[in-house]
Length: 389
Image 1 (cartoon, helix red, strand yellow):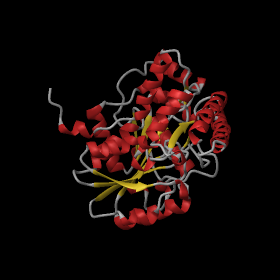
Image 2 (tube, rainbow, N blue to C red):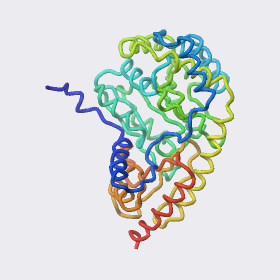
Image 3 (spheres, rainbow, N blue to C red):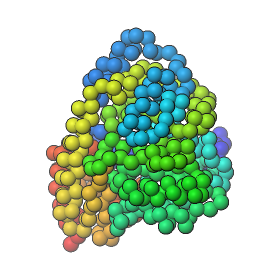
Image 4 (spheres, helix red, strand yellow):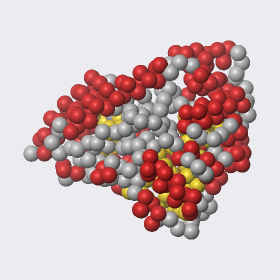
């Protein structure tokens, strides 16, 4: 078999590779605390599960429209217009099996070979993987803890060329948990209008926010028509396995994205969309409780990491990740990642799993119990104190 050359450009998520190594150690009888996977450790709220069961009983088991059920798209549009100020209606919405298809479909619809795509580095690794796969060129925008992992507007504008087609944003941000400052979002919008490029705004953590209000760049004047907003249900409603996401975009682009979906997967499962309708229109108490618990864990893990000599950790404003600076140990991030798993029994991710500018950092997900987080901190402090000496 001879694979297409493009397959050599396709990356992966190393979180799953680390998980596999952790499972192998667990099979040998080792206890591993999992701080590597970005998945809420809560059950999907019961009212959502009940809605799915009811939908199955009522026969929502057949093909639906490729863009999604009209009544579901209407609810999404109404809520995102009210909550985030994005001017949209049902025709702007495409429902997909998870959020990743919105990344893929958007890039397939917009990018030609050789186009430039500006993207933060470090960032979610699938962005760069898809850009490379489609023959475009990823242009990194370095993020660092010296400015709170905010995007540098001067750096952004200096890297715009005649080939710049797309900018990818993610706020709240994976892996750092940082939230773009309002003035930064407004500055990005001004640059996008000036240079006429599109934006893919990944807002999957938009409801996991610990302070202030989420500002979507699509809500700013003149930006709705040049922005694709990616969102979904995995993080907010602990629905990672349900595979339910959506994009909000200009109507003509939505038609093309729906056409790609017709060719790729036909449609998103109808009964999961009915569950999504229930999620948005039902009680939000459990969502608020999850965010409150994440806040409690965030405060504990940030304090615990900063108490370990050699580690400095900023307090994230959103999502459920910390991205501490570990350069003081004089080790490559990947070496430190492996050492913590093997010697401390803590699974985390090297910062380089998210791009070359992640060297010198580790990512920990605090989507685990406070008890496990405290045990992990204790174990890491013991191992790293020896290394620090």
